[in-house]
Length: 286
Ligand SMILES: [Zn+2]
Image 1 (cartoon, protein in one colour):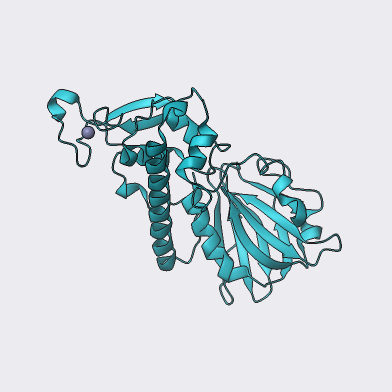
Image 2 (tube, rainbow, N blue to C red):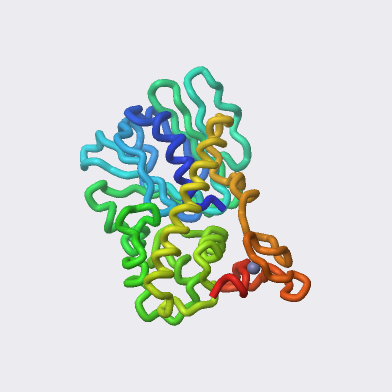
């Protein structure tokens, strides 16, 4: 599933390709993804000019101007399996395949093709001035990489929650876009047990956790960025960062930097929280 770093990578790929370009044609090859496309989407988008390519949590937000009703935003979520391919001037867009659901042509000979085999993706339109109140966005917590996301803010948002900290930091209302693997890794680096009650995480530990969340997301974005240079496609579904995880999928192995006797302790432990796997060290994480 495209996580925040992958979506940010897609955004960084899209921005230079479509900024300032005008949408000349929209091809919708079906009526819906996860939800129906907004009413008259094709008609509303054609003729508009791209003025921003932003991201909020895992939503791409393409700002567009030229609509009689004011500036609008194309809200675009890649779902579980969505990919965006960019075709630049002179590159022929291949004949659509089964899961190529949307094509957006822009001035300057650029085309975007959206592929989504599982169709959990989503496109919606919002008036730019009302974007923060959009139902999909209004309850989302702070951006993890934003300056306003600090240990103190996290601690405040956790309040007296009795849920386990791993589940709490994956809650979009607490902080945006910290996915399962990143949550697991950040908790390890911060030395916090994933099972600890969220409301009982100290300020010191919350500071460490916020720092580690930022570090791991930045690293993943950087890895995505370097991948992007080598590939012409902006692929939302890449698993390129998976190989550099410390804990993930390493049940039974010694955790990095740990001096515990794996023969006796069993090494990295796998548990299931909220239906998702967590990997942690019961010795190093308290
Ligand atoms: Zn350990």
